[in-house]
Amino acid sequence: MPFDIDAVMPLLQEHFHRVQTPVVDFIAAKTHDPFKILVATILSARTKDETTTTVVNRLFGVVNTPDDLERISAEDLNAILFPVGFHNAKTQHLKQLPAVLRDRFGGAIPSGIEDLIQLPGVGRKTANLVRAMAFGLPAICVDIHVHRISNRWGYVHTKTPFDTEMTLREILPEKYWLVFNSYVVAFGQNLCTPRKPNCTSCPIYYHCPRVGV
Image (tube, rainbow, N blue to C red):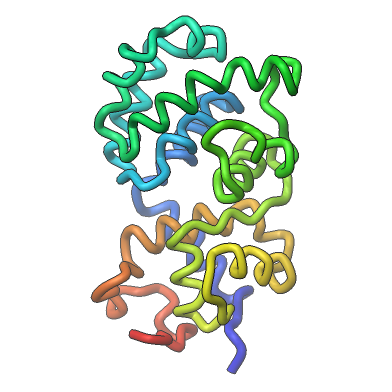
């Protein structure tokens, strides 16, 4: 039986509003600032949400614009970013960011995927998430949760996140593109975990084939 995405999405929406919001969604709702959404997304890579939340709250106490990011010393920035994964690389990327924005995009955060991936520390996952969260434009962000769970549902049959993104672009109704990552990430963090998913409490239990579970 094909996976019924239209039946599942309202259930995931209900679950999303009951649990803690993923950090980038929180920053987007709180600030509506493309710069802060971009920075939070870069910092969230390979870092737990609770850690990212603590760090961005500290960072945005002193950095609110690309100019602020340029003025802060690399040493001070790295001290703030220390708890996040790959903090040295992320410090370097953020210090490079203002010049790239100024030289290539007139100081503004671009909204196009091909433009966003020109920014330091930005790959397709980050670019898609920023495009959706900061600009409300159609994008499909595939992180490890989306890749893993889409395959667990049998909705896709893919080996890599890139393949998952390309497949979802073909089969996922566009009306779900802006919220798909948010709903699935919250679902993956709270219920559909990599090991021992909490199937007995799952709102989509009767829709899910539980591939590999």
